Image (cartoon, rainbow, N blue to C red; front, side, top):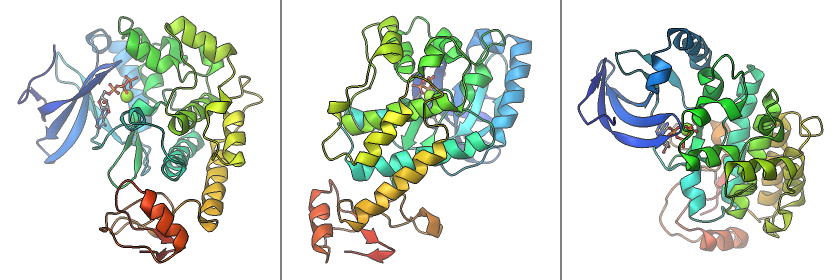
Length: 347
Ligand SMILES: Nc1ncnc2c1ncn2[C@@H]1O[C@H](COP(=O)(O)OP(=O)(O)OP(=O)(O)O)[C@@H](O)[C@H]1O
Ligand SMILES: [Mg+2]
């Protein structure tokens, strides 16, 4: 049953629903002790009643709580008030990448900085031995200043039953939501072929999902689709992506990267997500040098210098950029932005 505003779960006070997914409802809530807002993901009843599973989940949650990266939404802990148990997470405002893609494909200057940040988050986690296992546009949020935060990192594993192992086909996101065809479809579309076949999963499954997300950002539609879960999984295992759907302006380096991420055989796939990050960074800097892509790089106030190049944009009012190429890019921009090139302001 949905929780109403004002309901208390331990020290947390429910403020409003944020949405629902495969695992159940997610709420905006206030931590009355620390006085900050958090996101509470209420765990399914069947799950929270199983002491052994909860204990295992808590062990996994501890690992997840130890990761700290600007592009990962933090996991604060588990709230154990009976009868409801919930996962306490960093609250991330802003639309999900899925919400953004519904509005249409992302231009290269928007898609690449998002992909770059996703790659950075994955690279950090993979180095710590953590695999996301459920990367998809619905699990990435893009905040107002262009910063990407990945949600649900490692949860598919943490929530999986011992018997189900690490396979996302058997993950709670899917099994709990067995009646919600839309949710299952949404997750199956990003599953690597080895996952779809029920084989073990490693970081290369995230690399596959990364390829699916980048393809979807650039084309505005999912790379593997179908009417039923079986159709989607069959497409994942057998179908060749519709490469001609990529915009003609997609740089060859990015086309090649997509092909390497979407190799069906994990042994032939791109092996490290850091490679993808490097390719994207190089492509972005070449595009900026050529004036094809504006450097949307005004860092937020107080942001470290390294934030430059990550697609932060800032509203500055409509003023004409000095440089002709930046003027063209500026005219194309959906809203006023400050353009920076090599740290120099262009407007
Ligand atoms: N930490 C968070 N901060 C803000 N909103 C969140 C947070 N986590 C989830 N949400 C929002 O709550 C909604 C439901 O999230 P949920 O993760 O349950 O669903 P999902 O991502 O679609 O599916 P899945 O269960 O496979 O992750 C989504 O709209 C999501 O953006
Ligand atoms: Mg989610």
